[in-house]
Every structure is written in structure tokens, then in C-alpha cells.
Amino acid sequence: MSQHAVSFSGVEKTYRRPGLTGASYHTALKDLSFEIPAGEVTGLLGLNGAGKTTIMKLITGLLFPTAGKVKVFGHSPSDAAAKARVGFLPELPYFPPQLKPAAALRYYGSLSGLYGPALDAAVEAAMRRTGLEPHAGKRVSEFSKGMLQRLGLAQALLHAPDLLVLDEPVSGLDPLAIHDIRGLLASLNAEGRAVFLSSHSISEVEKLCSRVLIMVQGRLAAVVKRQEWEAAPGGLEGIFVEAVR
Amino acid sequence: MMRRLSLLRAVALDSFLSGTRDKLFTLFSVFAFTAVYASVLAGVMAVDQEARVLSDMGLALMELTALAYALFSASTALLREAETKTIYLVFSRPVPRGLYLAGKLGGSLLTSALMLAVMAAMHLLLLRLRGFGVPDCYGWALAGSFLKLAVITSFALFVSLFSTSAVSTLVISGIMWTLGHFAPEARFLAEKAEGLRAAALKTALFLVPNLQLLNARDASGSACALPAAALVPAVCWVLACYLGALWLLRRKEF
Image 1 (tube, helix red, strand yellow):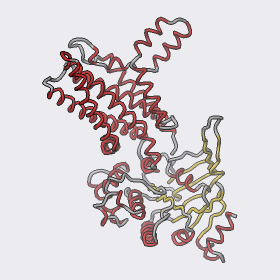
Image 2 (spheres, chains in turn purple, cyan):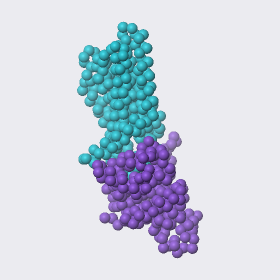
Image 3 (cartoon, chains in turn green, red):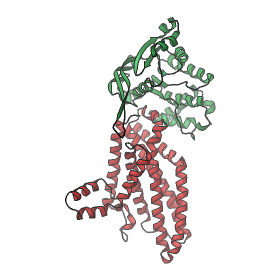
Image 4 (cartoon, chains in turn blue, yellow):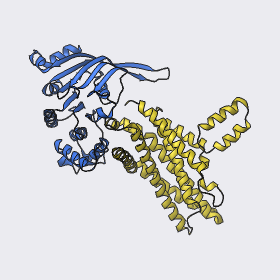
């Protein structure tokens, strides 16, 4: 088993946008190398356009690197062996409004290769863990933003992944929902699962993560460990502001 | 194998259920009912040819309505999933893109088949109310319409993977459907032409399916069963569009 959940080695990602007068190119990531250790909670901080979502999509095989190598548990992110061990929560996940949460989860569970009693058990466990059980009778259209985020997390947990990739998991949520999600992520990490999350909330990252990557304009500006920001006078915020200025 | 089948069934069922739950499906069904019912007027005016007019107009309206629905549905199927980001939740899982595409195509075809079946039931009921039985070759006519829908749905899915919008997919697929009904005439022109024009026309004909072959009721008498010469090209077209779409989808980023 690879000791790193994820490794980036000299990764570059350039987007090509076709136009009438020829294509335009935008480099979102440049010469990016880092590792996400298995079993740790790693945060990803950066301003808008810093390349956070691009990194997450490269890990989940939704994008392909222009140069360099991405490995997930030693495999290419496109390999089924890698995808089977990753759970992904995109920013603002969408679910068909007419569905009840269990139906949505059953669909995604079946896409993760679960069926029969294993699928039933996985759906029930994911709903219980994310606190969706009391809302089982509601349709997605009746869900608040916090409940939608819980459902998003539930679909990511269905196949008991070793790595959770979460894009802005607490964005726009009320304090109680943030508290609950923080507790859930901490318990998942206590089970040995690695969590990689991006956020604009420095305080959230500070509470949850043991290590933080700071991205500036597609480049890795700093890798900060908990001990370092705890020892710094301005904390993680001070380090972040200094890095992005 | 079981896992692959389960995946395929899950995607196809999801595609079918979301298709039938869509307001578009209800709207098209209501439109089809109105259009088929309106064909009674034309039938009455045809006096002694009422049965023929009722059955032919009904079948034509059914095919056009199902075509419009299938085109809308196939043009937006993948685009909508990309826009709502639901595709992220699919392709971040160990779902082979080929299976996903096959499931989407299967679901779309099931929805089209259901729409045809609903419209056929309304049409036959209407014919019965007017005192007529099931027209000759009715089943084969429906089978021909379904095969045309299969060809054009798979073509629209293929086009949707490189076109810039659902509208352009609709237009390109609509043009292909129209050209497909004039393939024999185009072949005739190609044979009359000479030189470079003939070569260009003959080459272009390879890129257009001959949909006239699937008009079962055009055949005279009892020979309306669709021949292998009609079935095999239709299946080949579906397969070719699927493989083309798969080639594009495997390279597509989200």
C-alpha cells in the first residue's frame, strides 16, 4: 500500500478555450509537487482562481494533467482501483429535486459497485452518519443547504473510501451545520481515512487540519504544519496573508 | 460481469426515470395526443380513405413527436449533467465511461420506446373509436420509427460531445434526420453527376444513414417486414455513433 494517499509530481494544468479567432490558453497549475499522507487531514487554502478546484478534479480523474504525474494510492486517478478508494464532494452538489435522499444514495451506491444487501446497508449507514435519517421522508427539493451538504457527504461516504476529497464542505452553512460536519470529518479521520479539503475559511482549516497547502496563482506557495502555525504569532491567518500578498 | 451489468442497469434506469419524470415528456405526450386526435379531422375529410389517412397521419405525427422529444432529450442529456455537476459524482467513481454512455443511450431509447408505445395506444384507441382495426404493418411501422429514433438519438449523443450548445446539436441532428430521408434521391443525383462532384456526393452519402429503408409502410402488400438490409445499417449506425461518442467522452474533461 502506498504511504501517500495522493502525490503530485511536477504537475501542470493548462486549459484550452476554443474561440473564433483561435484557441486561448490559461495555465491553472504550474510545476506543482506535493503529497497528501494517508490517514491525515490536509487543507488547501488559496484565493479564488488559485487552482484549488483544479487540484481536486485532477485527484478525482475529472481532469487530466497537461504535464507531470498525479498518483492516488499509487495508481493513476483514472484507474478504477484509485477511484474505488476516493469519495468526492464537489462544491454545491446537485441532486434531482424530486428524489428522496435514500433513492439518490442508492443510485450513487450502485455506481460505486454496491448492490443488494450491501447497498442497503451502505445507504442506511451513510444516512445515519450524516444525520439524514430524520429527513428520510423528505424530497431533495425540501432540503436546506446544510441538508444538501450532508447528502453530498453521504454519497461520498457510501463506499467507505480511504480518501475524502471535499471542495468547500462548509461553504455557506450555518454554525450548527458547520459544527456537525466538523465532528463528522474528525470521526472519519479517527477511523484512519485521509481527508483533503479546500476552504476559504481559515479558522475551519485551522481547527480540522494537521497540514495546510497554500496555493497562489497556480503555484504551491507554502506547506504549513499545525505546529508551525500554532507557533506563529499571527497563526495560520498570518502565514496565509503573507503568502498570498 | 455482475457488477458491470448492475452499473449499466443503474445508469439506464436513472436515465429512463429522469426522462419520464421530466416535464418535457408530459408536454410532448399531451402534444402527441392533441396532434393524433386532430388527425381525425383530416380523416373525416378524406371520406372513403378515412382509415388510411387516420393511420398514416397518426404514424407520421407519432414519429415526428417522438423524434422531437428524442432530439431534445439526447441533446441535453450529457450537457445537463455537466452543468449541474452531477457528472462529477459519476465520473469520480469507478464507472467506465463506455458503460455510462451505453446506459445513457439505453435509457434514452427506453424513454423513446415508452413514448412511442403511449402514442400508439392512443392512436389505436382513436382508430377503434372510429370503427377501424389495427392497420396493416402497424407493428413494423413502429419498429421502423423506433430504429430511426435509435439512429438519431445515438447521433445526437455523439454530436453533443463536440458541439458548443444543445441548439447546435439539435440543428445538426435535425439536418441529418432530414438528409437521411432523402438518401436515395441523393444517390440518384450522385449517379447522374460526373467527375469531382460525383465523387464528393458518393463520399458524402457514406456519412448519411438511409432512413427511408426504415419506412416499413412504404413497402407494398405484405412485404412490410423490415429486411436485414434495413436493420443491419441501422444497428451499424447506432454502434458507429456510440463508438465515436465513446472516443470523445474518454478524452473529455469535466
